[in-house]
Length: 160
Image 1 (cartoon, one colour):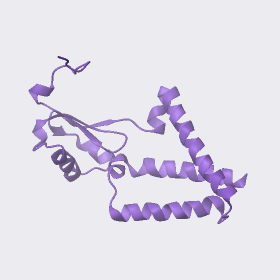
Image 2 (cartoon, rainbow, N blue to C red):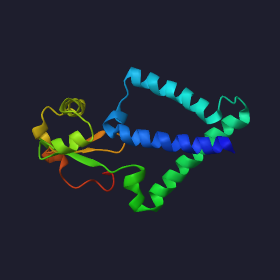
Image 3 (tube, rainbow, N blue to C red):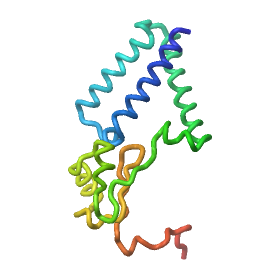
Image 4 (cartoon, rainbow, N blue to C red):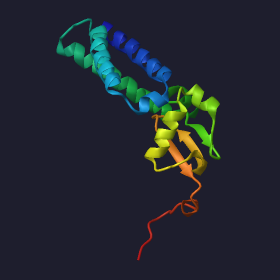
C-alpha cells in the first residue's frame, strides 16, 4: 500500500511541476529537455517503488498513475469550474496584430518564440493576425485577417 501512496504523491508533484513549467515550454522539447525527462522518469520510478523491482510494485505504480490520469480527465469533463485548475485555459496572446506582452510574460513566452510559431504557420508579420491563442498543450492557434477564410465554417462537405 505504501507504493500507492508514493505514486499518488509523485503524480501530484509532477502535475504541479508541469503546470509551473508553463505551456509554451511544453509545446516543444529540446534534446536536453527530453533527456532530462527520461532521467527524471527513472528517478521517479525509484522514488515510487523504493527500488523494489517486483512486478507487483511496477503494476501498482503504473496503475495508480493511470487511475489518477483518468480521474483528472473525468473531473475535467464533469465539473467546468475545475478545468482551469486541472488543465488550464487557452490564453489570447495576440489581438488585432498586437502582441499582448503581459500575457506573453505571464506564460514565459518570448516574442522570438511567437514569431517562430507564426512563421511555421506561414504568417509573415504579426499585423496579419487577428487573434492568436496559446492553447493548453503549448501550441498556438492563429486566426488571420484573410478574407477568404473569414466566412462561416462549412457545416457539411460540399457535394455534387
